Image (tube, rainbow over all chains, first blue to last red; front, side, top):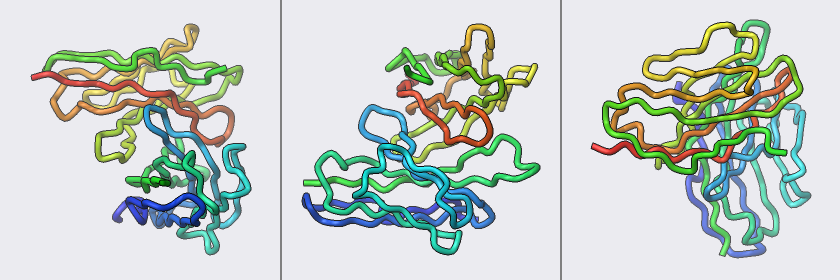
Length: 117
Length: 114
């Protein structure tokens, strides 16, 4: 198992462009989370999926943001009409939730850093 | 109100010494979990240790231990025998009832000095 993979690791874009990030979770994990982290802050929750169902969205997730997990495996996070305030690290995490899964520890990927010029 | 408060933006510790990173939390739930993660400069969040609200013993994982004081709502991380590789950001996080998403504090930057 190679852990949680995120692609691309870095993205520089111009304001107004659309960007898409991909996350491949640990294969047996049924939950997938997206967080955003700006400089000097802790990660802030955006949304999460259990299998293919999107169960919760934060108020931070404006209508320019959309996330999908079509087959309950990888996920994409798209930001439309990017703004400079979207510049951040976008972190993906996965976990296994079930009867005997214990603490539901999140395993994070290395993140996708977005810079909007 | 802040759910997780980490009051130390930065800490220094001498190599081989122990260090305590503070974390206080705010919840009205009886069932919750507390987590510590390490984030080196590479960016990846690394899970260190977990404490459940009903756990009677303080959690320990190798050189990491969690000083859990429920009445004070504090969950301080203790790192013993600090190593240069411990230099990183450290985040305290909490999950309230059920399996709600983790809420993180702002972190503490630890620098280990040789």
